[in-house]
Amino acid sequence: MKINWFPGHMHKARLQIKETLPQVDLLIEVLDARIPWSSENPMLAELRGDKPVLKVLAKFDLADPDLTQTWITHFEKTAGVKARPVTTKEIPTIRKLKTGIIGMLPNKSGKTITTMVVGIPNVGKSTIINILAGKKVAKTGNEPAVTKGQQRINIGDGIFLLDTPGVLWPNVENIKSGYRLAAIGSIKETALDYADVGFFVGRFLLQHFPERLQERFGLQEVPEDVEQLVEAIGRKRGCLGRSGVVDLDRTCKILVTELRQGTLGRLTLETPSMMEIEKIDTARQILEKEEKKKIKDAKRKKRFQTKQRAQRKAREHRR
Ligand SMILES: Nc1nc2c(ncn2[C@@H]2O[C@H](COP(=O)(O)OP(=O)(O)O)[C@@H](O)[C@H]2O)c(=O)[nH]1
Ligand SMILES: [Mg+2]
Image (cartoon, rainbow, N blue to C red):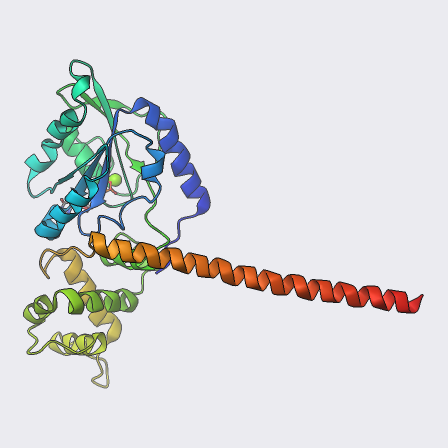
């Protein structure tokens, strides 16, 4: 699953964060609790320097509670990082972020604190800003990452919040992260092949939560592989084409939609240990790609030199 984030767009977002950071005492980084790693910006850790970060695991109502705790413990191993789960289903979880912020900057007592919300699209940044501000200040939906003319809103307890979130790009190098982002609906529908994402989701659920599939789709047995799973769901839900064959796209769309809506139960699609493995895999793939390029370039160089030698010889011969 390839995500298109234009280098120009990334560059701009990066500059905007760098420009705004000096005014900010603490960053509120919003992540999707279902994919805390894949919804992270791979460069924020470096961009923030030693600025404290409160990682907000948003949409906690859709994520697995135990795995959310595993992620919080993982994140908090890093100095200057705290993590909290929040959900709009329990507004106090969002309001209480203020106590978290104050707790992270104890030597600021008496002085004001300026914070800014950052995160990839669709994680819930505007929702959180609006709840903290107590009114609708951030546009929900697709806002441009405007930093000029930002307003500072007083959200009480000496905390000021910039009204426009910083929009960051997601993890684009890891292929599985791309699938997870697509699975939760973070990538636009038009750029999405339901069959591809459905197979990814099906495979994940078969491996980690087969009983959820059985229960939700009323399956007698756990299907052996993802093709059998799609076949079974398609039949159960009557997604049949003209000749009685299961309609792949329609069935996969059902599976993906059910995952997104939470009807398959609260799910987290990745764990810190999966992340470690995938990081190594991705690094290896990048290295392999570079190696291949090197070999290709060496061959190209050789071909070029051979051609030149032949040309030189021909010229000498003519003389
Ligand atoms: N289930 C659930 N949905 C949420 C929650 N917070 C936000 N959303 C939804 O996620 C979508 C994106 O929210 P938005 O605040 O616009 O995200 P932004 O692009 O990061 O600013 C909206 O449809 C929200 O209603 C939450 O805690 N739980
Ligand atoms: Mg928004």
